[in-house]
Image (tube, rainbow, N blue to C red; front, side, top):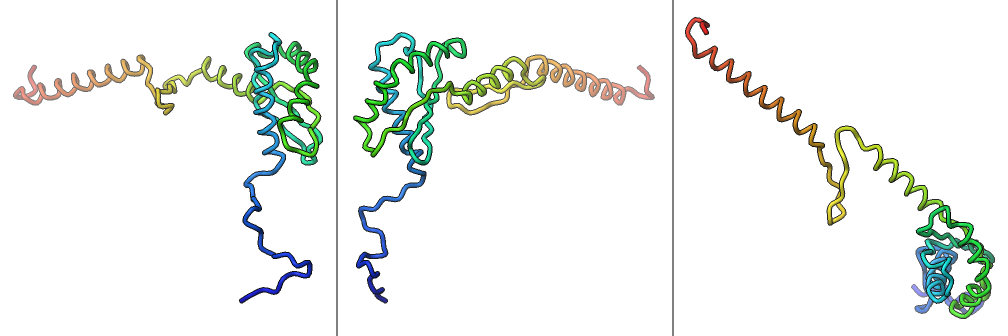
Amino acid sequence: MNRPPSRSGKSRTPSRNATTHAYPRSARLGETLREVLADELVRIDDERLEFVTVTRVEVDPEMNRGIVFFDSLAGEDGDALILQAFSDHRKRLQSSIGKQVRAKKTPILSFRPDEVIRSAERIEKILRENPSPSREATVNEDNYVQKKVFAEVEEVLEDDLEDDVDDDLAVDLELDEPNGEA
């Protein structure tokens, strides 16, 4: 069954060159900006930005503003210096984005420390300092979590097993003797 062409004369089916994406345009632009900014940070000769990682970039749906989230080895103590460095180099970073990204406009960048990563680090630290009393999770080379029983628990289990064997031997000896004489 052939459909008649629409009034505009264009086909209703998408062309072969049309692309469909699984995630929104702002997310794709955010990932592209993250890559461009990471490359540009390597080129900037500023010791305040040496150990800084751009973790993600969130772009608003209108693509006017972008929030650049970062983390560094300096942690929360180095945030003020890093934010100042980003402020000093913001125009250079904007310019680099404008040259490398094909877009009608370049989002205005703002910079923030990535609290998600820091929260995860705090949780991991708490879990490391307060392990479960009977088990400790360890990760092997293949990144599979294995449960390891503490040595104290193993000793208790071995002692219980030895006591059970001794009790069984005593019962056997009592059964072997006539009239229950020992």
